[in-house]
Image 1 (cartoon, rainbow, N blue to C red):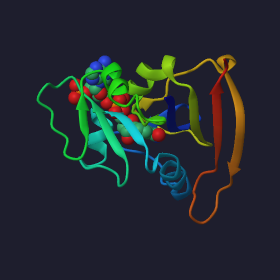
Image 2: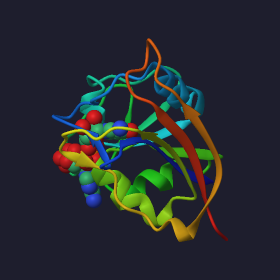
Image 3: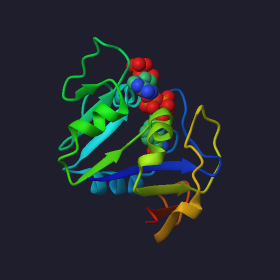
Length: 163
Ligand SMILES: NC(=O)c1ccc[n+]([C@@H]2O[C@H](COP(=O)([O-])OP(=O)(O)OC[C@H]3O[C@@H](n4cnc5c(N)ncnc54)[C@H](OP(=O)(O)O)[C@@H]3O)[C@@H](O)[C@H]2O)c1
């Protein structure tokens, strides 16, 4: 199984505020969808809540929580990252989709980082953890300029952990 993380973060590493996303970038949402469609996604309970308590179409959802009685309709509930990875281990590709706590927890295990760097700084309360770029190879990057639908420019970057 290949473990990937997919995230959009700002210049100051902000990923969210008040348990929500901050920016609206339709082509980044498309990018997220094209990567994760048909795949398994692992998320923290707060990110699950930020989806409105219902799953995204056509994806297997695994939620991590410490709450023993937590029920998430349309998702599988686990109580540790290890358990989440264990129940997904037969899958070819699994995506960690946040939030800040779950990115930090999983970073040592991530094989591939699919990052959208948003070229602006934001006030927020959730951050993507720093990672050592020396441990990863940047295999692709693609710049998206601002346009009528995108208030901020951004760059898609794919980093693969070095062997
Ligand atoms: N920009 C992006 O790409 C992106 C992607 C995803 C999320 N976000 C943003 O990130 C923010 C949410 O991030 P967050 O860090 O606050 O929350 P989170 O990582 O989504 O979820 C945190 C929760 O996960 C559970 N958890 C954490 N560590 C655990 C452990 N070791 N064992 C068992 N359960 C554990 C706990 O749930 P319980 O409290 O239920 O025990 C904890 O409250 C939101 O603003 C969201 O919009 C941004």
